[in-house]
Amino acid sequence: MGEHKITSTGSMAWSAEAGDDTREMMFVFHRGAQTFALPPTSVAEVLGQLEVTPVPFAPGWIEGVVGVRGDVVPVLALQTYFGLGKAEAVASRRLVVIRHEAHTLAVWADRIVGVEAVEVGAFEPPLGNLPEAMLKVCRSHFRMNETVVHCLDLGLLLTESRARVVAG
Amino acid sequence: MGREDYLIEFRCGGRSFAAEARGLRSIAGAHWRPATKASRRVVLAELLGLTAGPAGRTLVVARGQGNIGFVVESISKRQIERQAIRPVPELLQGWLRVPALAGLAYYAGGEGVMQVLDLPRLAEWVEAQAPEETGEKGQP
Image (tube, rainbow over all chains, first blue to last red; front, side):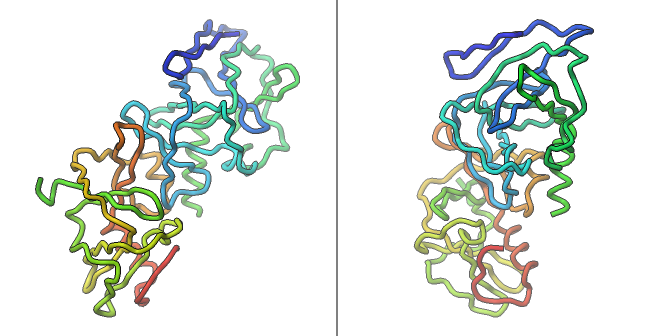
């Protein structure tokens, strides 16, 4: 397992040994009742509490925008997007800033697990009982102890979210 | 600073917004009323899905043969330089149902992000929603 630490500025940094042919590194975090995973290379940084400015005419799953080092970053409410209800604002939550190609977005994490080395053979197709919106953007799942971890595909998430707006 | 170069800051629905001064025909009082059938008065907070506070001023935008007056709660004496506007991220732009956000500007030393509304474009959108309607308009 990799390790993560809180820096003096409240942001989080982590280090992880590189994956190899048998293991893949995944950044794991909890949000609401779900546990998600992302490739660590897509996680730009993890920040503490920031004020989110709501944006007019945005769908309900866009919580608003935050300013991160001169950039304006939209915050996507994962729980709402997946139709899992509105997640409570946990006091210890952190903002995970994610980069995919030229895009940057952020999502809240109630708790960061860290960077985990997952055996390649542990990845299985997404569970069939997921809400449709979640099923469309999950590429696989694995189990971490007894917890099911859903692996998000950021490319699909961005494509699907835009299609959802266009579809109204 | 010329009128072309600054943003005006205003309160609407209890929040701070900004708009480019050059996009406005005039700033009128709270009781501005449409003078012609081609004009209309819009409570901006309701249009944005916010709870409107007491009407304080009206930001009047020219639109076609008439004007559209956006009623807001107050206008700040502070002027923000136009260079402070940052573009709306492409990702966010693609998520918005109405392209009425001209940009975003930092305030309070970078701690907060203020939305810069594109009022002429919003006026265009308001008119497109109900071209025959006159008078007050609220939330879409």
